[in-house]
Image 1: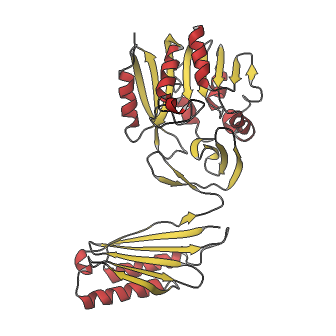
Image 2 (image 1 turned 180 degrees about the vertical axis):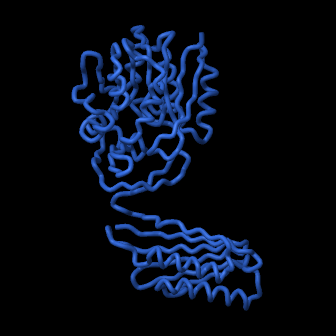
Image 3 (image 1 turned 90 degrees about the horizontal axis):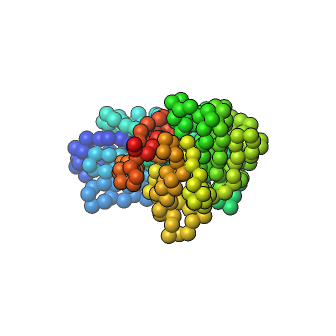
Length: 372
């Protein structure tokens, strides 16, 4: 059962808010009358600050309330909150708020205003996801397809009429059925020939990369995914991504191992096993400096991205290629590239920035190979 918030901003010439006391009283009264036109009473509380700004609170018996804040520097904000039954319609409608916006503009002689759509708080199905750049995106989710807690993470699949089924792990967006561009980017965007090649996938529990590779007749694909429950959920609910590749976890030219990739990589290193391609599809950690927990001890988690990179390059053939991905924000790519420049033996790399439909932000993809 959600609370709906409506935010209105008005930019005003400071001189309008710096009139005489009588002028301020008249202006405040006019603004209060406009707020009361929404069926609210008050102000039940009003404060005048030392800088001349004001703050007023209004409410009604139905539990709706509004706060009106006047900043003498030239900004007036009106925040309205109301309770709406799940599936119901707000009593204070968008149309009435459009009317209030116009009335405020006339009272304040404001030439610029901003009215945001309703922010829906406490909904049974939360429509919001925060991007890596801390931007809020509202999705059109209409149902929870699947949700369970595994020993490693919360697994959620939500349905979107626009993007299809979308996988979230610990509420971090992973992949939607609309996001074939991600899979193509993580496999070289059509530049590579995987026929008769040995490929290692780290992570990849949605099955998109494995399915894409198996269409190209590789010699053998090994996939290391720690969470069996992600695979099971994808098999049933992400068929638009994995298709039938998880119907069996092994075949003539592929094997899915449900294990932590780190000890397996260490064993491959000891055994001298190498691959033509290594694809790092682990969640969030490939080019991030944020601590992530898999099965490593606490002191190791901060070094996990570096450790996986080092191990991956050790099992990569001299002519092989390694792919990884991450956010294209907050200087993360720059830090990662600086890290690459100091690797020994040295590597070369190619960066591509791709728009993934359901992400609502650009995503960075790296192809890395050992320098000749």
